[in-house]
Amino acid sequence: MATSVFLRTGSAAADNATVFETLSNAEHYDTWQLGSTTGAMDVYVSGDGTNFLDAAVALIDLGSIDPSTAVVETTAGGNYGIRGRWRAIRVLQKGATGVSNAYLIGYER
Image (cartoon, rainbow, N blue to C red; front, side, top):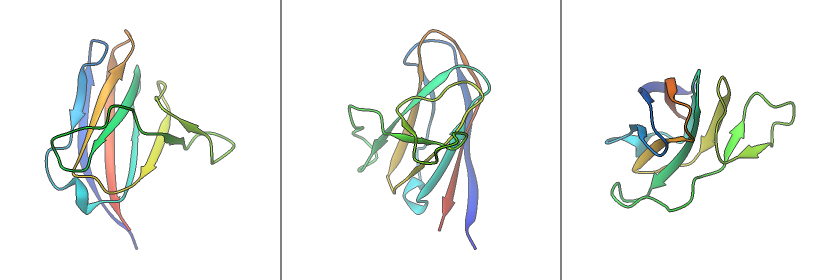
């Protein structure tokens, strides 16, 4: 049985603004779910907790009919997932439309 922890919620109002960032214990979880009610987001990861990759990670669109549909940014009202262990995860607003009611849930398998 998988355990989970609710890691972060947040919002942002400007392009490339940080919606939220995990600052500790992200490496304890390997499966992630995220989404927001408004705005688009992209996700950056860090293996050392300080230096983030320059490119956003690919996310699986959990609302797609095709479960292998990968995207690099979310859309409003969508539900997305990623797999992997990182020291930190940073979620940024993508575009001019503000992000609200954003969430990130980490699961340990």
